[in-house]
Each structure stands twice: as C-alpha cells, then as structure tokens.
Image (cartoon, rainbow, N blue to C red; front, side, top):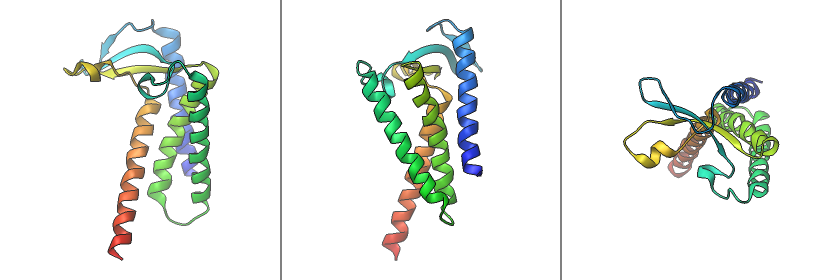
Length: 157
C-alpha cells in the first residue's frame, strides 16, 4: 500500500504544481528563482523526452501510456512477492511521474514543463523539466542500480 501512496503523492504534487503554473505563468517567460540556480517558466512539450516526435503526439501518448501500463503491471506482480523493497520503491517513483505526464499527453495533448537549471551550458539551460520528470529519472536510476546489483549477485554465485 505504501508504494501506491508514493506514486499517488508524486502524481498529486505534480498535478497541483502544473495547475498553478498553467494558471499563473505566461508562456515561456523565464523567472529566475532559488539563488539564480532554477529558472521557472511554462513551456509545453508536445513530444517525448526533449520534445522528440512532437509531430506525432498520438504515437507518443500511446507509447507512453503503454509503457506506463507495463511498469504498473510489473509493480503489481512485485507487490505480491516478499522483499524487493528497493525495486518496488523505484518503480513507485517512475509510476507516479509517468502517470502525471501521460495524463497531460492524453488530456492536454502536451506535457507542462516548468523549470530548468541556470547553468553556463546553454543546452542544459534550455531543457525544461517538471517534477514528474525528476521522479521518472530518479526511479529509473534506482531500477538500473538494482539491476546492476542483481547481476553482480548472480555472477558471484
């Protein structure tokens, strides 16, 4: 049950922030915040990561929804098993973020992104994220770490 609550909390947090961003920010008008390290601005991602396939929104939405459903199915399979707490936690992070972005893709036909990092590297400064993206990234990194350690355990046996 805790893993479902983690996913729901991430989904809810991003939903609230996206609503606030949609209601209160002008499109693509940067506002520097938090010690000049974070730039807050509203942009719309009509494609996948880094706006890839933005001309094929239906495919991106369908693919994202299918992938998210697959991860949810994996989580449901794992929930019935003892152990695997780190992996269950990692998948909860991915699911919470993915569900929020999939809802945007289906409902709005774009994902609302709203912050970037103020760096000297122009390409990094131009990438705009949302909270869901951060949890998807973090959860995926945790899944990768889990898989690497599982591989080490198998080769050590």
